[in-house]
Image 1: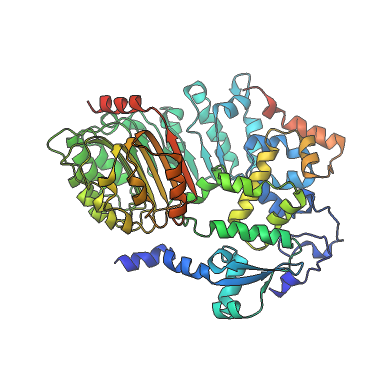
Image 2: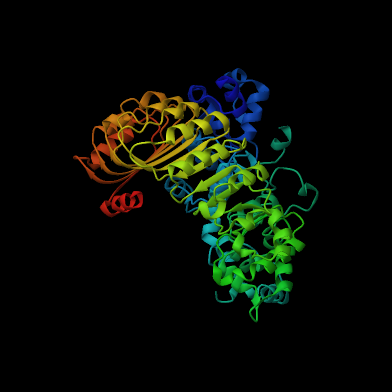
Length: 189
Length: 410
């Protein structure tokens, strides 16, 4: 009965996950740098997970590194990504009976994640987010997105453009029209 | 996979996934400009903005405008929001319709935070949103907000799936899709026999929470009815138990035998030295357990929890946490990630036991007194407990806190 329920739940056995993370695989950035990462941690990337599953674990461990060819996966970005998955691979699994994912969406970032994602170099920050998106690591994309949104909070459009280096492609008239349409949001509570 | 490798390292074109805009003239964006993201990723990034920030920043760029509203799936209505969509003290339906059309993917509207001050506008707000949101599936709503007019109840109540607060039974009769109900009065709503038909009409109920104290006779009846809910996942009970006859354990057995999906259980009450929770052995699916007890807690009260092998979250609010409580606990908690403790007194010798929770990642302790616990003990714990990442010790005077509980119990 209990085994059956295990299966339905789909939680991986924690011991197996820990064991597997002792196995190291190699990841290669688009700049050519090769980095080691625990298998369970690396499989937080759906892209890597699918590759490992189609090639077989043994092949991945003994042969060539997995090539991550998107140009956002620079050496620096890949190092950050490995740091993140090595910290988070043993996070509690999501329970689909509850709105764990929605709850997490609304939660503030943990202290560790805040420190992790607060990088001064904005090009690197965007590389990490784009690379995590390419590698399909939802949790890390979320961390990056929350960080950016927390910086947008309360800022004016012009400040947002300057901070995130976004080009304003509206004409002054168009911008005025949108502003007028959204005037209600500025009304006092 | 080959597709992913096509991109040349030198190219600065960024698309989300390698497909899409390849045919268009490649545009070169600076690496530190958010313009480099394709619409999909841009939309994901903006999906964590508040509704207010989304409207305020709509005119940042065309890409911003294109992507910022797609991810609005759930909206929370607050007093602040309602006050902004009023025109001359009436709901501006045209404005609201414009908002709803921009946010075309709304599935859930949560208006449980709206207070009496703006309650009278809620029926019209909800009706307007419903007429303009083709994907609307759920409304989370406290029924007084809809009012008592039968017509409104009939049109809106069937969409209501979560309720935090209700005052009368009448309103509930129109709800047949409830998945979550929180109440803070019991007899006024269900009386002696109301629970039977409620359970019959809301078989999909997943979460039931009562915050008012319930006396022993009612508890037996309530648990009997709740055990007919096969989908029940989460249960919170607040008990007014007297010293002596104590049906808690039997009631828990009834639920445990019948509600096999129950994964979260929260109990709040008064304990005496003979209190046992033996029937917890039936809760093999239990993942989160919260226990708040005043009074004297028996040694080994928590021993039955060792059969709950899936437990990931344990929250204890007890007058005293000592070695007797933890003695038999450690080895069997292979999945416990989160331990939260609020107590008056915690003894130092508990900590080595805590360090044996092999999967523990976060420990939060609120305490008032300890025998010689120091910061060093906590930093030792970080090194001895293999997975522990965060400890939050909160030392504060909680004498009032326990006095409050004891008064409640009386």
